[in-house]
Image (cartoon, rainbow, N blue to C red; front, side, top):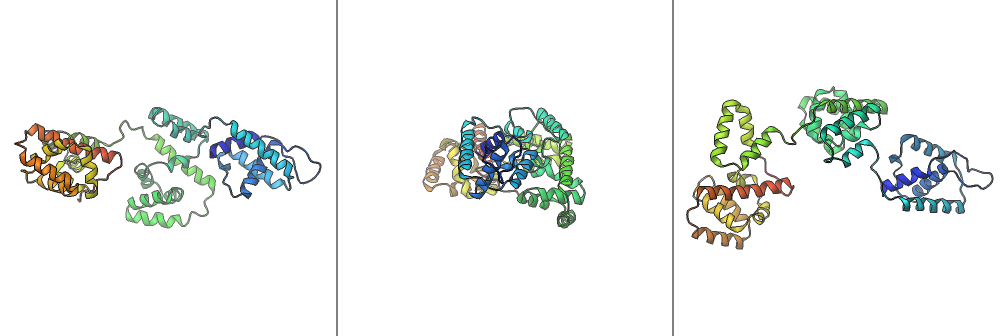
Length: 357
């Protein structure tokens, strides 16, 4: 609805400025009508998105409001009726601005095309660079703020939303974090144009980085593949990685989440969500195979203790009558449980507890 207001306001705004302070009654110009609508809505305590208009329109509208004095009631209601008619005729509202358009088209155009459009918009001055910078995740902003001077970093923190600025500050080395925090107290005198130029420079740096073909990093991708590989394959690959690059192999080990990690990295409250996603025969197979193994038995007890007692009792009874589980069936059943956890994590329905270093 806020965009509809902006579009309707823009449609009745063009026109010449004419003072309504006195003289003979007459039909107000389009710009005067827009001033009347804004004045009325502000008087009623409503919020009207004047900021969605181009800056030259915002300036001329404000000037017009400053020139006007009194408007008779008949003129007021005539202008209101016209404005409402304009609103009713709006059939479709576009987002306004290249950044908003790119956000709307996210996933529908290639990263290369999006990057090119951002560069062109930045070069032409059409977009506010801070609109884009404030929307970026902390991990994209951290390398930039680490490389910048204390003064630029302070401006950047001042423009970001407070929660994101706090998270970013917490990731900086202690000494730099203290210097940047102090520098924020000295940004009061920075003029808007300087802030805009800083934003343009930072956005240009980000645009200079080539678009990433993969959303996840190499550690996460290898870890995800090994998560659902057989135990033999997983250990064989990890041993090979340790020979080639021990540091990378260690990071991959930390990224891996397998059946035996469940008891230490899953919150008890999330167990019912997990068991609802896995059918009971699969749970019975996984549990029956895991119980005889000292490394895996704690996972079984953890899951049974945190699901409904009726379900746990039923699974225990079936486990007691289950014969020896084939290795292949055991691997598939345990992988099904891990896959369910990963699906819940991807959907944001659970968060894995971080493994202590």
